[in-house]
Length: 453
Image 1 (cartoon, rainbow, N blue to C red):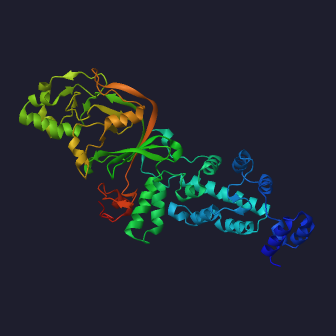
Image 2: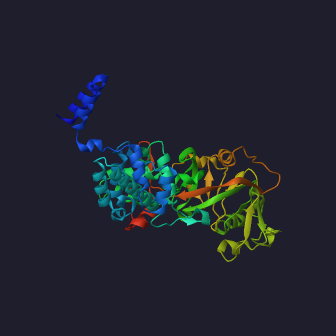
Image 3: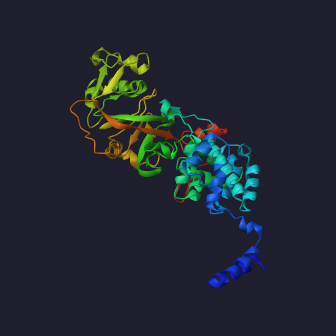
């Protein structure tokens, strides 16, 4: 009699109490493998007896030795999902051999038989491989990103934490599918690479941008800002998702906004604009020579004695403006706060050696342009009051009688400036023009890889 037939016969007999003995006789004839099917407690007991790394044992101990990859007495489909990801780890710039996929597949095959020991062993090895893989992915292969503060250097969480977060995910399947331990931009880029034509420009470009996405933080970073210089857009992230976004104006091709990370620590209300020396030479000195010193008063400019915090205001008549225009002399010029001030009403400061920051702007028309490369390197934001409200958790008063009023954030917020010429959108991957020619430099050849929008 077949196994299923025997089970049906036994169930029919059990409905009649007088025939319970007969039911047991029928079940006695079932294959020994069915009797050996694992119960959850049996798998837990087997996991408890597993040896292995301390961090892995700590993860299982904290969850009462419950399995992660086993449901009831069978392996979950996520086990096969993970194996597929490990086999394709080269997509992530990693070597699949690192994760001993062959041994893992062998353990999975043995676990299909339902033995508690085999299931426990497979669960243990799957967790070990996943923790190593996720940890390696969180370490960028190489980085051209300038990191302004040590706390922002990319680092992988410990393996116990990696597994604990994965186990707490509402859906382990979705967590794997979206590479949930990475920045939210990473998963869609990775999936699009799998469907890109082999050795094509699209494949090259997605790989390059996947590396850039690896420099962005994982969801454990919490609230943070991402500025995409290629798309001239700012995104506010909370708990691994975008909560708001706005347009920005970024640097021109010869004054590119740098790829960097910093901590937004305070806002400066009613800021001065300390004008870069090259603009003083090219723009201000030439206008003074053409239009006279009245130009300075008209624009709200003042000349300072030096670049120190205690610099005094100098009489502009004492400046040799011809020498400044010719590059023979450098002077410090700043613009007073007010309606025409290029900084607008507020700056959002993240201290860094390049002097880069986010700021308001009176030039509202620039946000209507498709190509928003107009700045000298800093980032002009479309809606400074809205950004301030999100950063501070309440509206920020953007008027001050005192210039350069500093307002500290209750808690610093990381900001990451990146350059994504392949960007995940609802309709698929949007390919953008390589306006800074960073793709061409990275891939060689000196030409644009794709002519995106």
